[in-house]
Image (cartoon, rainbow, N blue to C red; front, top):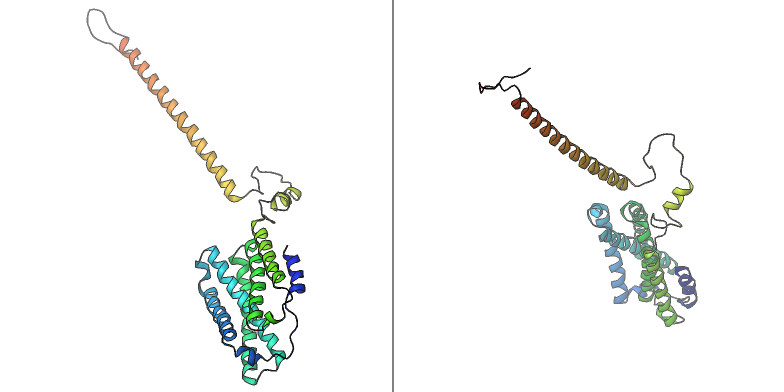
Length: 261
């Protein structure tokens, strides 16, 4: 679905515009506000990502990385396109700095993403967010609204992207829950034979520890039952022994008890 939406975006999306001036485009208050919003969002999300992303939960980590990657990527493409419009020296130097910094942030966010979030959730969200943010930037800064072929088709493309993202998020993909493509099938196909031992090396540690704990509980219950039975048997034997001892060796007429050893 995402692939179809991407292909259709080339058909119904904005066309080419000639004779644009970056100074004039950023001279509009809404365009400059959006550019500064992207820049501030990139800086703030990067600071959080570098300093304290690990202390947040999974969904907040995904949000931080999405903002950092989408804003840095969008700014990088925006200033790269502006280089072709012959900006003045101050704008050119500023855009060079933004391009280098945004590229470094985007690369660093990829490294953090590999260990901070689940890829099955993050990758489709990231792809959809980047495309959507670039489309908004094109409309606001580059005035793509002037050359869009079909607004209905343009909106439907993003609905397709959102649908594809939702399908990817709800699918098991290559996780252990997928019996056809997941880790369980790979383990069945490539299991190694072992010469000794009984533990299943292909089971999860948590499952194995749970089985061991259940076995320990069962053993403890059996031990408690055996201990209780032994105790009752010993007490019964002791009572019988004392009864026999006290009832034997009693002399008639003397009323005394003599003990046999």
